[in-house]
Amino acid sequence: MTLESSFKKVKERVYGALENTEMQTGINRGMDSFQSKIPRIRSKNDVQQLRSRVREIKSYSSRNLNELLNQVREAFQNNGVAVYLEKTKSDALSRFEKLTEGDRLIVKSKSLVSEEIGLRGFLTSKGKEVWETDLGEFIIQLRGERPSQMVAPSLHVPREAVARLFERKFGRRFQSDDLQSMVNAAREFLREKLERADVGITGANAISANEGTVVTVENEGNVRLTMTLPKKHIVCTSVEKVVPTTIDAVSVALTQSYFAGYDKPTYISLTSTPSGTGDIEKVIVRPAQGSKEMSVVLVDNGRLEASGGELSDALRCIKCGACQMVCPTYSVAGPAWGGPTYTSAIGLVWTAITGEPEESEYLSYFCLGCDACNEICPVEIDISRLISRLRAKGTGNIVSDLK
Ligand code: SF4
Ligand code: SF4
Image 1 (cartoon, rainbow, N blue to C red):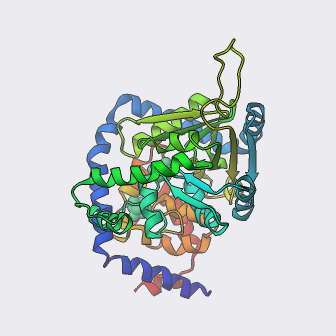
Image 2: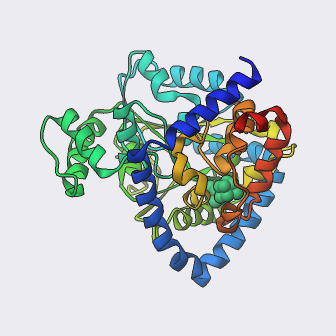
Image 3: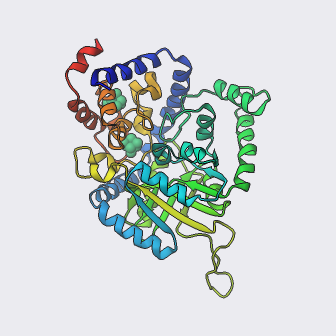
């Protein structure tokens, strides 16, 4: 593919999105809701202190990634948890194939890294039945789409479109203003899958190197069910999630939740081992009621190489998605302004790091340089400067093609 034809493709996609009023309705309702809540959340003293602490934690962690990875592998092994560091997407997929050998039904909670490696499609192609248990992921699974935003993957799908989708899926009518009935339908359908599943795959918001503890934050309750009901729990996440201590990891998860626009998380889970009990004479017996086995797959896919380069600041990102929710280009172009997994603002940089550098260069030309993303970022990444670095890698020919 020539550089020009690739850029033309990106341009056509972005310009085409400007006509998509349904997508813009979904995105803008979500952005309005986020922007009505975030000023109050950000203004709290404890949130300000926490975000400042998390900026230091992530700064330290991104500079000491290799050391933390060595430490966390040892910690997981001490916990009886199998841990795998996989360099490429295909290495990670092969690992998942082995880990799920003989299993039939798999449930998943939201994991951007699993989207990055195409995990659901891969496992389905191997004859597994795979269901997303996060409502937004379930919606895009039914629509055959990729995520449009880091925390809210179906942000581009307004309620009217969800009602139509669920009518087709469940064979009954849904009123677009009755959101509860749509949530109930998904709950009923997915609960049956959760109860029968052989494997539960979750992501991680952060992992502590000292104790090998995986921290997840959520509101739906699906992550806890996914990690505890099936006999096997596999964590699919990426190397930059590792931070020094468990308190650090909880701080990252809390900050992610606040800057995703939630004033308090419903559930935070800390998972270090398969389930166990010490209730008889304080002797630990495993398994108990939760998972019988736990494995962790840490995906690199370009991150370790990026850690020494000009995009390394992105490794401090805690994937809260706040930068996307204030971005004017995203408000009109939505997920069309993005790569296969990551969209808009810092998503352009993630697109470059995780294997699509040319695509990210073409996308960078649609950034307005307004700096709204920088202003909201809890860990103070200079996102617009990183995007300008992507642009600097492109050629001047692209600019003339924009006219
Ligand atoms: S600087 Fe670019 S990425 Fe950041 S908010 Fe403005 S348009 Fe979006
Ligand atoms: S760059 Fe900052 S605002 Fe954007 S997702 Fe990452 S941490 Fe959040």
